[in-house]
Image 1 (cartoon, rainbow over the protein chains, first blue to last red):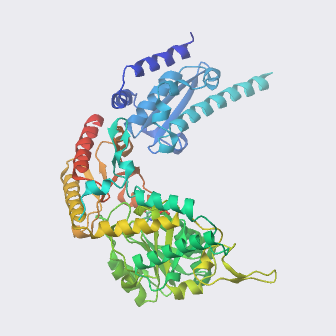
Image 2: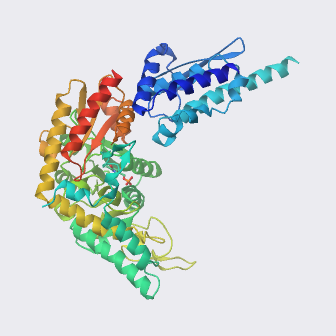
Length: 148
Length: 409
Ligand SMILES: Cc1ncc(COP(=O)(O)O)c(C=O)c1O
């Protein structure tokens, strides 16, 4: 099992402990509260994810060929969701992330319960993570071509 | 006399369970629910009087046209308009405002002219005027509100100049739930010869409207907010003005003659009703307005709404973590529509949690970003009540709100 699969399984397992959506929200709220502080100066327009009712900032660093995400939101459930996403994807290679189908979101029922029409922006968060990864992949390819 | 529980029987959707819990629908300002009489009218139109309007001589066409034109007369009566042709059907309040902004704009607005709106408008009563101003190189001016959400009527006279061409103002704000002194605004504007458009999207829901008493020049509302099918809407305009305005959209039925050398326009209201109209939904306005008038005139329902209003208003005022917006000096001018923020808890989080408790609320900017900026928030939470909401629902709401706040803090 890859690290990514392992992480996704763990999230699905954790979520399945709760039958009630209120309990799942409690869990997301805990995740949100536990998220590492995000520096105020990084809360810039270009790090803001468009399409969310609450404000969500996402930042990515590349270290050792891997992507490391940090994030914040002014709404705590949203913060829990982005925290959950980055706990799964942070520290992986851009190729691993870009190649993933993000289907585990469906398995935990998040997509149905937090649909894009309700403007909570889960889809926007996923799209942004995908975009950042795809960009990182093409930058790598670009630099490989150049170094030839 | 009708009890809310009797009224509820007419709204099948109110028996819905969401996530296993009884639905508590407090998003009525966004759209109301539909009574059986409205769905029946829609079905009846489809099943027994469906045909295109005004165009053919056959029986079905006559029946469909009659239903449509009878609806126009019902709306005329509802608004107290002088003539049926002063009632133009549109797809909603937004479409009606856009019609006026375009058509009145073409006739009467030019470079250097001014339009006045207020800080408490819905985007639908801001953006069409901005587009007009861009088109004509005119200026949009804004009448401000005070911290309680009251329009600063005292500032209106200073805003009006020789170049002011129109004032657009909401009857009741969809955020603040305050009835604005529209009569007074019309009077001030008319002293300077400035016509007034009143956005009645919320006003027509909560107040008996008489456009001749108000003396406003235009009044618009949406059917879907007062029990009718969505896609229905009304523009009332004084005949003199509507007559002087050019068509907004061109198409079938809005013409008198069409020649490549030039066409001429149909008389009112046809001039503004281009293309096939909303044949099946428009007649639902009749049972909708019947029921609305019944609700507004029913002592028991009115008393129920008053108790809910006082209860929720007091709850929000006295809550240590809550700030509410829309606090008129005279509570009589408040309708049961409440917007508020909770210290330390985001409106979106609260709405998500309350949703899981079965409560439908609105959260966010509520299509009034300038007002959010004025208040200094990114969004608010809004609970809006209809005559079918009960005191039990109101109490369940406050209990759940406290629970949700506890979860988040
Ligand atoms: C005050 C006000 N004006 C205008 C509108 C626009 O109405 P509609 O979207 O039905 O055209 C609304 C409803 O959202 C409203 O509350």
